[in-house]
Image (tube, rainbow, N blue to C red; front, side, top):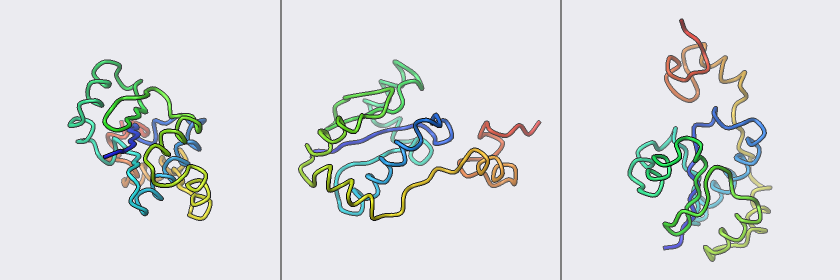
Length: 146
């Protein structure tokens, strides 16, 4: 089965200048999930086991380390790492799934609530209250509890 997967790190490690692009791809993934299209954005935070059980991802992480993120896989073959696909690359790869056009996907994305990563301030405020948005606040690395 044709499928497109983008594996990425935990959201608070995504550089600020890239967050908007990640949010767009997460919108596309939400539409894909809703419509049964085989495209996923897979976060280490949400699915750490998939990073260990997918041999392609495990190999890239072993070879390159965290700098490999994000890692794009199309039809069980590695196609890109260390940066998100460009919109042009994504359009070609997405359309190879033969479900809907990229233009239709973008149009659908304009109709849904846009994905939003919490700001660093929101993360810190929530972490400091003891209910971190991403993980155990003693492990998240944003707050210094010493």
